[in-house]
Length: 351
Image (cartoon, rainbow, N blue to C red; front, side):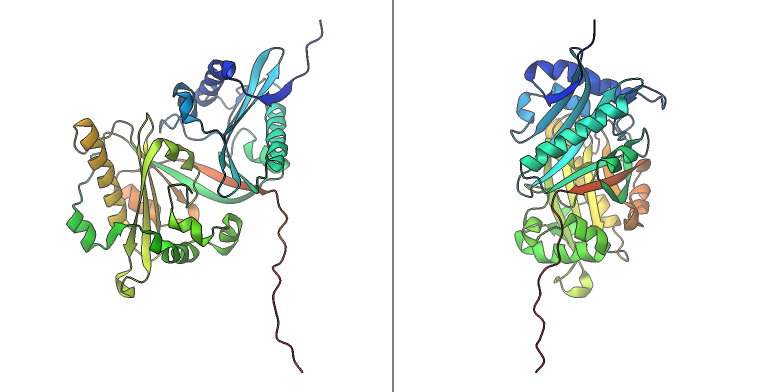
């Protein structure tokens, strides 16, 4: 009997149990020669396990999300999950798994090619993905037209590490306050000063994006931003004391998890600025929010995780001083569906 050829299709509700098991196997496989392939994000030590999302209520999935499967001989051998940002017409590949001794790479390539075609039909402008440099991940994605534009260190603080307590008065003395829509321009300037110009052109943030960072639009982007949908997100800024409050020295994004995920910190600061106060205040916010909701003080059951881009040093040292350890390094890739053209400009005429 000849087997039916494999095909990529949209997932159905009846697939969820099989997909949860496929995702679980992908994230528990530590053997480099294993037939299971995934994006290789650090899910074992840090507990950022995407397969947990399948155990959550179906309401956790947004109507705009896309879930694709590879079916062969009546069984599921591949999975691709995409989060869509309708406000920026961007898609993020959150998960890309496949099982097959010889054809796991081909299965994942077919999944990627299918979602790229489907995204183009649905008006996607950019496709993002983060992965570990293992299992042929980067080679596969570059074969599909993605380019690498950065790397991030993933740092994790274990639950056993006590969380600091920073009072509101101490934060105010350090120039830390909640972000406001009027901070959009200073935040944009801070990002431009911190980020290399080629990366800033690729990410292409607009001024309105900075009016609501961490809410409808998850900026600044990171490899772990997808877990923010299961967190209460707050954004703080730290004013530059030498600029009379007109400029910002740093930004802090705090995501306090609502589900079984680690809490999230993201710090962006000027290279010559000591961001220790921001890191400590972020950890204090986590302790305050979790203590109020669970009757505890200064303890967190799932740990805290943060991404730090390689060009943002010495931020990583600030986190290490607060008990974080480096658990992985991941590569950021992006594919544009549109062709960039030079913007027209007027030049003065000479008579």
